[in-house]
Image (cartoon, rainbow, N blue to C red; front, side, top):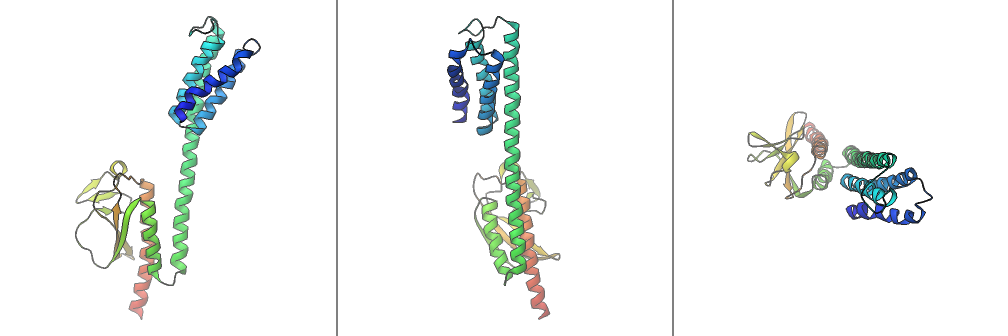
Length: 241
């Protein structure tokens, strides 16, 4: 849809301005076309913005520079305007795409911080640490786009792939390229540790094709640490009792 707008919008504006061609300075037409490029880039994506910039420059040449209705330019000032329209359009489309990316990152970071904060509050107030564990399990499913997740309390069994505390994934004795491939197809363990003691693990069931970001994986580890702290408190209270 955005690519279609990138092609159609500059042409549509040119058609609207065409009856006033003799009354409008070419520089004003170029500025109006830049506005269209900005709109397409802001609402679409980087490629759409670039296509809109190229399309705007072509229609500016075709309709508003002599000889009209030909892709040719006689006046050097019109050529300069057309080139500047293209360059400014391309630059603005890149800036708009980058601003949109930063906005997405900010929203995502806020979501991650909310997850960590809510889990910390629950860990302090919940009547049972297992409530925190259940909460974290549900958070992991959503955060890492999992098909399922279960918690195993107690000793380690087998040697499944492991999500490490730095967000990396280990498969056997080698690193797994989780940034490119996502999580391995088999269950992945995320261990819970409290005061350097192993307490249990979440077994993550990945969704084929899903590629959770390193940032998401680091947040998952942080949530698991909060669950581990809650379980450690329960275990210490039991031992003391």
